[in-house]
Image (tube, rainbow over all chains, first blue to last red; front, side, top):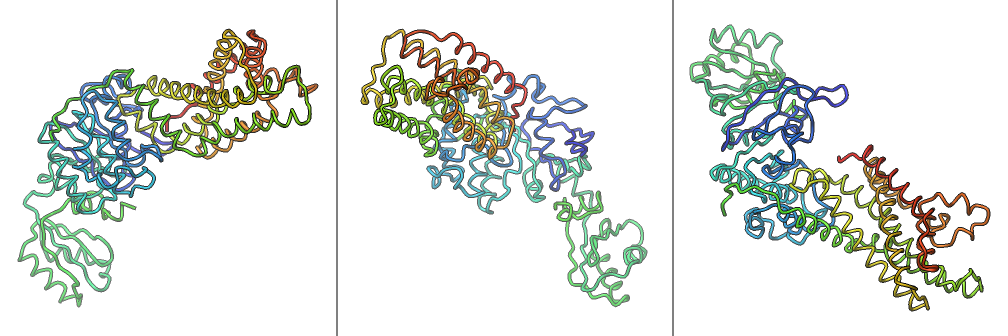
Length: 300
Length: 254
């Protein structure tokens, strides 16, 4: 997929199993929305093949649309329409919609039911967008950054809702740039960077491998050859990845004895650690190792 | 509450009914749209009739008999062109068209919903303008004349509606707002819709090709003389074909 000269998504391949939650994870501009919109039939791929529920999303759109639910990243309502009125309208376009009052209650839209769309907060618009996507009782749900702009309570509520939908047999594909969201919710994660899938697997597969990590943050910038020196001291089986001038990630055989080698190395080089954290590898670390960039850095 | 999938599309007619009811409701809620749809035509009629009587301008008929059909044509034009274009432009801008594009409402249903909503609003406009005109002494004439006016209204709606959609689908919403209002005002003043073409002197012949003049001519022929103005109908049909071609070529949903 291209926009002008810019290649947004290139050579992407993924498969989604029924009844699962798949997260497409990546920083802004990675190609998540383009991927989703290609599945929804909004865009036609220049090459390759997309099948959704066995249907071509462009040429067989009419058969496909009633079976899927779509949550757009923003907008999607008249500016003067009231929240519940909009939801009732989308419900009326479907054959067997969910009861609107129950959905309103479940998503906490009761307080703003009569508020015009343009006066809803960002989080309320997100929740209404999610409600519009699920009200038609789809078998397959595409949600684009479902919890962006939501407060923590609404985010947890949304996670519960999506988990319940999966339990009830709905297949869900979501994009997110919250690593925590992918880790907590997804059965399968595809990490996207610059239009390509750079890693796929369950959150456990992606973060496990017996690996734990140490993050070292220091008060003054490291000397230029610090990563190599430290790697030499740590010996084989341990990987040292610089994050920025003052922090680096140690992965592989990262345990208590590694910790002591690191602190000895700091002492030897007159470096004062600000923090030294031992933890399980996170998707953030996976992203860093695969791209050499910090996730937040890439997310700009 | 269970989320067990039960997907499916509502019957087409129910979708169209929901869509058109929604559009009418939103239009009635929008102050500027009401101004365009009802207040301006009524003001034009009242001011025109009193002004003409005061200045003792005599067309071939009583001023209200000439102005009422023209103002009805103006009302048809304002809704089919300006209101439709502006509303659709913002629907596109706010992602509503994209959103509905992933709902089970097919594009034909969206279009049908818009047409039904347009016709409902126009019927209401004609009742209001007609009632005011009757109050000013207008008699609508024969049933044939009214039927011919309905044909003219449908042709005019097709012409102005397709042009309005072409505009709304091609340029940004703000540009649509500005252009649609400007064109509407220019046509109202100089497009021979409210006033007959012969009041424009030498320009009368040239004006004949404008959709506004054709709609006004067709309304006056129907409601004053009770006859069809076939030339005007042909002009409107021509604009409808052109507008449809432009809309299908240039309309972008996002």
